[in-house]
Image (tube, rainbow, N blue to C red; front, top):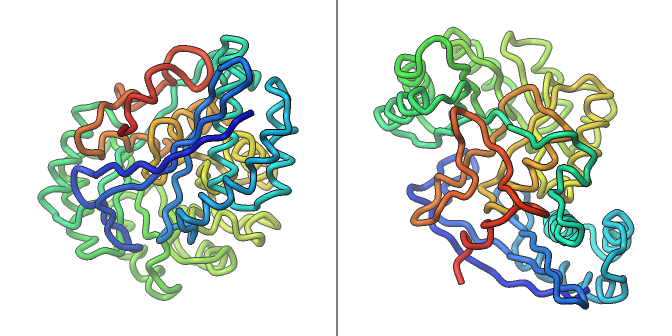
Length: 346
């Protein structure tokens, strides 16, 4: 298999503000694997250094480390075998994720089947998703919440630890209505004491859960016993301590951190065995990354809304995987689905 890749940069409609800082555009790596017969599979790497600590140059070097491994494998080699050998060449998870996506896409196109069917699912998933609000402005948050209700979303996620959290959440609740679940995400902005005080103050709004109130499984586990709001690990989902015993109610998994579809399914099964609830999310991925999560969801079947409705945040790009009444299905066609490559700038 012949590897090729290129960087692309795509602007967001508005800055996406979190406790990690503001993101105004996304740089991704589009990956292609070409078989000897000309068939191609595609994937993407979506590192976000402020979130996962992985620089895009590191991902590029990791992909090059895998080039000779890929060249040595026959076109129809099992995905697990090829990825295992690539894992010996690099441990950079976003690079492995991009290759995993491309390998599954190629495998599906070879047999003209969607990836969800190759994974053993009986039917295509229809994944319930949340709308994410990442503005610091109260009136903008209220407007987005009202539109989410009109559009049929049943869960809204609000970034917190970035300003007037109480005011924005009160506005979101007022405009979303009482029946919509509100999830908050602090991205580890708080210390233990700050998190405890903030959650006690925000709980009356009615919260489904709080993602990553503090950093680290041990600190989250302590907080978990002291507050009434359910907690989820996000950035700390890959803390080794999180997989020794539960540290929260739920785990938020992302393909780029897990090494792709294969790694995400494995992580979800191990997490559920420990008693975690599991759902999926995007780190402002492009459509190949979102598609990979949707196919993985056919096996994982998350019960909570997943944070995959993020393609609408980009400026001037078509959304090939739009949310309809608060849910997203994979694109039709073999592999990861047709029409996804049109999204990426030439």
